[in-house]
Length: 243
Image 1 (cartoon, rainbow, N blue to C red):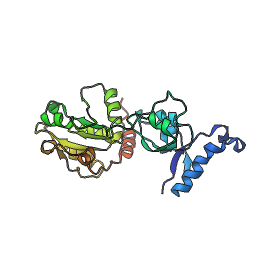
Image 2 (cartoon, one colour):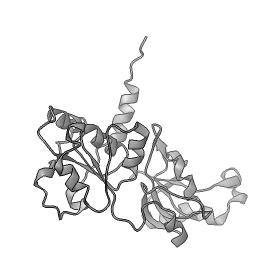
Image 3 (tube, one colour):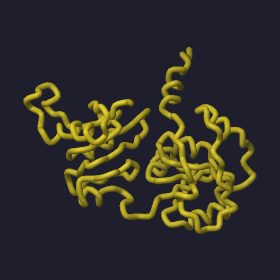
Image 4 (tube, rainbow, N blue to C red):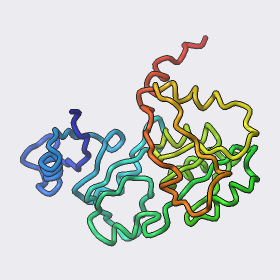
């Protein structure tokens, strides 16, 4: 079983065991006891988990291939009333209500991102989906950084655009392909994408058959994230030496 990559503040204790602040160094001890797994220190950029400490503001360092990445948060806290934290992370527990209030989207409806292919943008099925509480349209013609931030702000995504599904997988946002019309020229591309991970294409959702009373969770259904990280690493290794 692989170790848990945990970030905790080490301070001078990284090089001098006599300077280890006990509260911060409780983090690996407690995480190891609760999980039954080996715990290793990792910088936030590559960590799996933030736990004990006033360290939640470090979450902004969680990136992979220059894209923001999700962390598991268990007990971390804010250090200042002005701090604000994105809703994309897996918040299992935070230190208290002040920290909870600083997390985007807390107490709101589940954010459902709807990404129609440009040929589907004006369809009645899209308009109906956007009537659901918490649903928001993500326009494929918007600036790229805006689309990335919009996807990251969502708990779930429905997309008739293959690129919408790929970005959602890359950013670890549960998603499902939806069929809105017969206007998309290629269906092979969806199956082709999933085949790169050794997966059959998940059954798509036909948005034209919805009754209107479905919850966002039921629309997305069971989600299995492809092994995106391995494929990204392989792509980087295979980049050609263009001369």
